[in-house]
Amino acid sequence: MSLFNDDQIRFDLLRKYSINQWGRYPPDVIPLTAADPDFRAAEEIRRAIANMAVDGVFSYGGDGGNSAFRDACARHVTHRKGFSCSPDEVFATSGVAQAMMLTCKALMEPGDEAIIFDPVDFLFGKSIDAAGGRRVTSKVSWETLEFDLEGLKELVTPRTRMICVCNPHNPYGRVLRRDELKAMVDLAVDHDLWIMSDEIWSDIIYDGREHIATASIDGAAERILSLYGFSKNIRVGRPPTGLHYRSEPRVDG
Ligand SMILES: Cc1ncc(COP(=O)(O)O)c(C=O)c1O
Image (cartoon, rainbow, N blue to C red):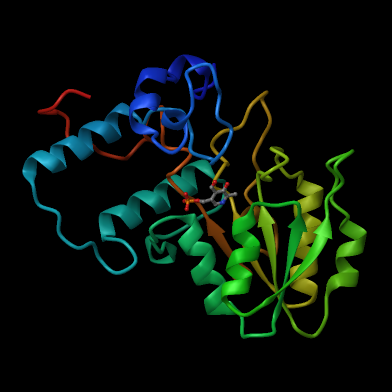
């Protein structure tokens, strides 16, 4: 059974708290607007937040995330995503949107080019624009949902710095196949490009399909920034083995 199914959804709470989405429309309307998931946060997370609120200490975190958080992320990625990640390779941001902005600003000079797919989540283009870069788009077919892997090579110029992957792909809602990822990584290796791989949807996979992390493809490791987030996928379910929450919660979840 999927951890992400309709039984998890509490419409009464959505109407109360999701003010910009569910709260804005009459009860018989299903708002398909922002990608604000309808799943509740996992019970362990609700308890941890409640405990912290009761303790009442809200101090600054460490630069790029405190060490317990980075350790937990590194373990999670190594156990769940199929490539090895150490805590010093983790950098915490306030979300994937911010991570995309920082990545583009760090890796691109004004006038540099980044290859993005079309259509894709608007944040890719916005982040490239914010860095003064130029978007170079590769069409993904509406009919077949296939990428134009051959055509990708034609898009590379001396100003190309990066290829931006969205895996699983938003808006098409499909995982990328190994051959597709390999073609993208090979292109990056051949032309010495960075890869920005947004994998924020990678825990919500249906119908027995498999998400393959782009970083697990040969050649990707030394040129990739893999972006994972919490706004979609940490809603329900058990934490991975090795993550510890306070065992005796003082506030019920
Ligand atoms: C593909 C994709 N990347 C990034 C984001 C934004 O992530 P965050 O909420 O962590 O900023 C979204 C949100 O819908 C998204 O769909």
